Image: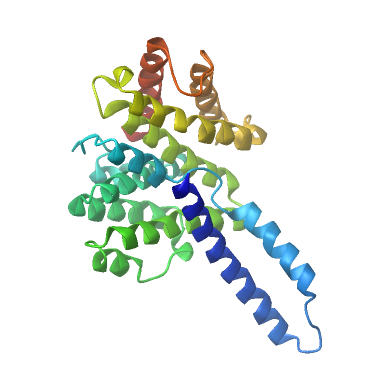
Length: 276
């Protein structure tokens, strides 16, 4: 998809610039040692592969909903006022992912008040998770200044997703980064399965649900190494159970009614464990 290429290119450009700057700085501090261009290039590519956002952006999901003219449903997203009520690292990280998807949803539909509310909710959890180092100090000002420019907002918020994921992994907090990713994927699928009372009868909604199958499979694969840890074990099992429903009836363009109902109920149950 064109959107996928765009978001990946943005991420690659950001990281390439960061690492190129880093190597340039190192070279400048040691004038007697010049970095081998081939080594620099290989290292940059390795870092980009390791730290670039590994799954489809939340915007790709919400834009699909917008394109099929699904209405924006007020109150379907997580209550932004709950942001300060999450106290464990796990709940904060998953809900940061959930608010990330909600922020993408509000941005896609030009819901300015909700954009501000979900950004503030995300800010709260960013502080409590000690992630402020991942963001520019003027990020709130950037959001405020571009409320009327959807394209620019998408760019700013996409960078925000990427920076949070990269920062967590660079800090050795891979499990926390997977919690955030899980929250985003869970909320994206929750929104998709709840925008209509007749999901099964809408081929475009089924297409949007199936689009999210690959990110969920990728997430399960990434989390497998942590399946027995206290932080990720239960959530890994939840992601596996979602993928098991997808696998009930293999198909690239269709799902059975049983699958849709099971998936809708299951994702709501998983989400409710974190948002309450």
